[in-house]
Length: 600
Image (cartoon, rainbow, N blue to C red; front, side):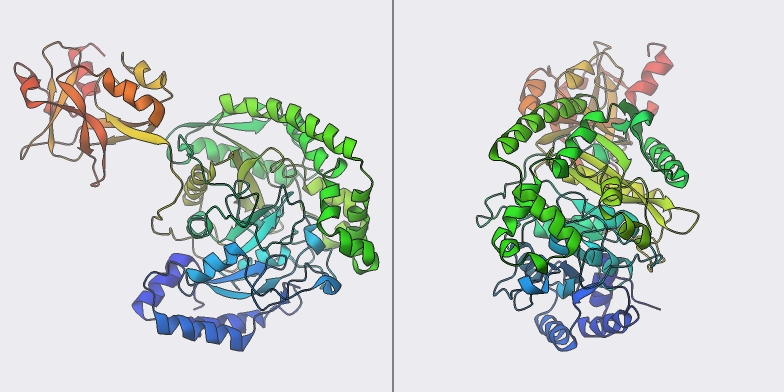
């Protein structure tokens, strides 16, 4: 039986001694030989280099290496020391002495770099056909496009040649190939993953992206790769993400109004998107319809405005000296960037500010937005017949994302009748990466799906990973009048509080109705306790102090243990406060007591 490449499955096998990095490398080399015509690689896996890396890891051991022996692929506009970086243009190739910052972090964590993958030349395109190394083929049907520009990175994971891969995403290159190959595609907040050692497309917008078999795998890789880098002038530290809507039982999500949705005649994709919206509702989401026109207007700026000049600037000296070295479509697009004036760039910046102000208004009403990742998929023949028009279609739901400084994740969302996968994208403001990953993980658990094109078992959940991403929130458990809908709940909601979970305490408490009849008191006892119904809320750190200051004695905030053993801040009562109080533990909670008393 083929080895599963999900990260927890690999790490479990290594710990158990049923697999070694050397054995895995040999297996992956054999798998690689099965796909000679898919145009996945520019620098393919090299046996001696990979076996040397495997032996190095085996000699060191797993201790302190969270990605020990985990194979990954690298888009060939990202540096790997000692291996040529070509950007799918042989005349441009150079061999770096150092790996890109993000690659080095992964290597330092024990990962195995399998090789460098094919891409739309100079990361210019969303389809995977614009390469002199061949048009990359879809993992499910080779007559269809793979998506791009991170084409080989996605297909390598989908076909079981790597556990995860690195791409880049300027206009959707980390999301479209994920959708077309049944993968998770994380496009992090701009600047959270270093782009030092990445050949730029649009330097001010470029993001290193992650393709993975599951959201939890993507989250684990993200946690390793994350970090501010002084060598990257566009790098920035992670900021508190606030309310974790991805882990909350209820949240609000936006959906483009029906008039704004385009599927380019693809009725199956339209049906699958409707099912994706319904799935998000089943996870606790409340739909809010959005006017999507400002997002579409923003998307048009990327190629219809002066940002194409940034693509020209990225390789200006090379393309001016050797224009014939570029793929024809790439040359046409790139040289078009020499035409805009500086005044055009300023005008476009002014327009972008206007549009961002409009688009950002939605965040007052929703926590995230769902769209199709792409409205349809094209055959390679259709793409080659109309390369610019069809590429524009694919970018409708992706081109605006980095211009607006949003985080996004592409998630598998079912299969069409012809067996091709369909994908949806969830996006939110900058620094909402972790809530998006949490929501994507819940999404996965709600469906029984294969991973990529060859993993038949559902994605296994990775262990909890510690992140250098603060939430900026404090969690507090409430058991009485602060519960949803009860008289004091407004003290939470007025401070930006959001409900995280409806749960119960560990069975070590007694609940008392205090003498005033308005509040209960929760007391921990050494024996004879019970599990009490409660709610866990999140409050911003900035408002938590004023909330605590308003709590009258004998109540206060202390450490409260929940069922399952976790602890959280929560309402507790001083022992003296239960003098004259009624023991209502048998009711199991304050609501049940109020209902029995006829006062709820």
